Image (cartoon, rainbow, N blue to C red):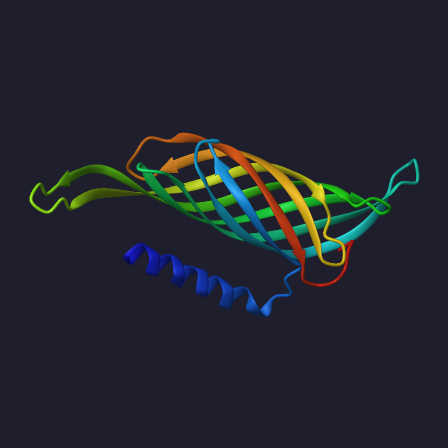
Length: 192
């Protein structure tokens, strides 16, 4: 219960903190680290800089530098629960006459993992109790995203990520997976 309250408090503070900033879009996704765990992720996109560039073949591209605050919850049933607070700095490129885009991001996040380490069953009542151990980790990631840019209302994307889970007081490990989601345009602009 304490973890849920803490998670909701962090979510509320993040919403208040970014409430004054003009958010471009809202993303909701299916999030699957290691391809055996599953969960969901909610993120926003705050555009820091937008510009156009033309190459030698006269192809015009819209380019964007953006910040994406994210929260996620994912689980491996009967093993552990995970809460993630992440920030990604990304670079997105899209041809002006196309709706498809590609983006590369660098992320840095805080991951709280709650492992079930042991359990016991009261034979008289049948009540089962589980003992949990919480592990905090720093989570730097690199990812590549491609998708259909949000037009007037909605777009979709696929993202593959890889990183390192640097746990405090536990062994480090790799961290990889995928994300499949939809983006809702909040500013009613297709190329920003």
